[in-house]
Length: 360
Ligand code: IPM
Ligand code: MN
Image (tube, rainbow, N blue to C red; front, side, top):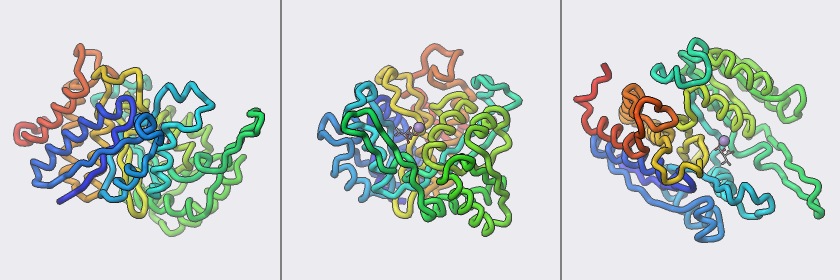
């Protein structure tokens, strides 16, 4: 298969982790006779520095002309500490999601058997956890009207949803549940928010089309508790934009490190693959950033093009690296310092030598 992939490394550790994902994709291309072409562009703080725009037109045009996008990370503390900054790195990512119509963000969360001891949660609670979060990505409070009064003392962010925005992500969540454990949990705040009541209504209607899937409701405050109290009760979690952002970071604690969580952001026409973690500026250029989330995002990219065997080989390589403790310091207490690129090298090697690498 021929694929043209836009690579947007972004800020902080973005470039380092993306480099490892590309290393792995190149190994896959070689092993399976595919042709992957990578085209780079800037986004976020690095794009502000160069072009005074977190999403330059050139970057957006490139994304629109490729088959898929591999995204690194975004964010820079210089902007976080300056609330009056009008141009911000995060706008690059938000505008990109909106412009490409990436309305569903799929975030798988699982507990790897070999990492159970790395989570602060008890082994018995997390063992066997396998959740897939469907986060609505182009609506809600992130994109509703924002205001700031002239005197700077009154601000608003509107949470805004239409039926259509709810419907399209809901269908994807139910379809996913059909091939998983046939359960969707809608996380909302329907006891308080009008938008949540609309979500419940629309999702309940759509659920009638998926008779084999069970629908449950959970208020987001309770969900935040249930995710760490009894994560195994969940299969697919469906939720609006901001709740999804928050509970997916929380759920990453189950896996042992946020550096493991990949995601796919999909729409009608385009698809982008991005780790759920941020730019981790403190770790930049130290070789300690975990590249697994980016590497698993590359595996999700391959799944998107139905290259399942290829994606599976990446996942096997990842599991093997975890099993052998070839991991960065966020997960590793045994070996001194296994760097970001060592992890990538190991998985690359695993892919290039599949015969030597049975999992036993
Ligand atoms: C994420 C990130 C982004 C979000 C930020 C960087 C805008 O936290 O992808 O989860 O809030 O969506
Ligand atoms: Mn987030």
